[in-house]
Amino acid sequence: MTQTLDLAEDAVPAPAPAQDVAPLAWVIDEVRASLSEAITSIKAFLANKADIDRLRSANEHVHQVSGAMQLLDLRGVTLVTEAVEELFSNWESDPAQCLPAAVRAVDATLGAVRNYLEATLSGRVNPPIRLYPYYREILVLLRAPRVHPADLIFPDLTRRPSFHKMEVRPLSADELRVRRVLYEEGLLRFLRDPENAHARARMRDAVFELEGLPQRGLARSFWWVARALFDALDSFQLPVDADLKRFLARLNQQFRRQIEGGPAVAERLPPGRAHARILGKWPIRRARLEHECGGRRGFRRHRPP
Image (cartoon, rainbow, N blue to C red):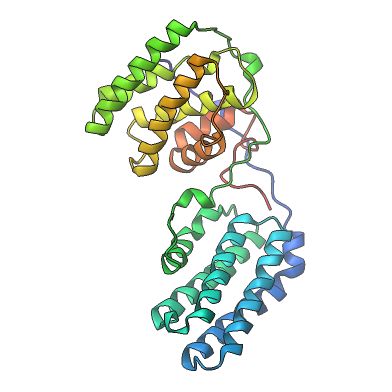
């Protein structure tokens, strides 16, 4: 039997409090200047690759921006600018990689960083995920082994669901084994046919009550978030990709650990990444998460700078 939570109209979370942009305002002029100088220098290097000092100048200006972003705790912007720094370092080792298309990508990326900071300074809600198209281009130029938008999603996990208000329901090892069998059946069918609605529902039903197990902290949060993921999957509101399939396979191993009484949650299955996937890709479930955690402040797609 499945269960859903309907949010009443009067239960809509309050808007997030305005973030403090004063620290950004103090450094924005220097940041603008550094980004502009970096773009000018890298274009000059493209025109004359013997002038390695222009490349180093561009790298230094971007490095200054990265330092400022770290101090402001703008983690998404920091990831982007650090990727540009790495690209510049590669070009110093191999100037032939600095091609016109690559410089255009850098120009667009640093321009996007400037626009992002300007929007943040104006008080707009500005999740770092908006920088992903530009970040992706830089990672492609770096030949990065992993390129995924979840890297630019920073859910605020400082507040926890109200587990003390939720019913605790112990399950015996035999009951857990039955649920694992159901999960494995659903998983195998899903891997054969990702559009199989019955397989999706079967996996969801298998994990439905695990959040009610008498456990604390990370373990209970993990199963609570896992149920959210299956809510999204069951409703066909979650894209199916290699990362999702890998997560579902690892979840099966977590079932085994739960039955054997091993470590509560494997280190490779942190709830934060599951939060990121759900919060970033399924707004309906995000509303429930925010509501149960006491308002939008509890689960945002990015941490306020």
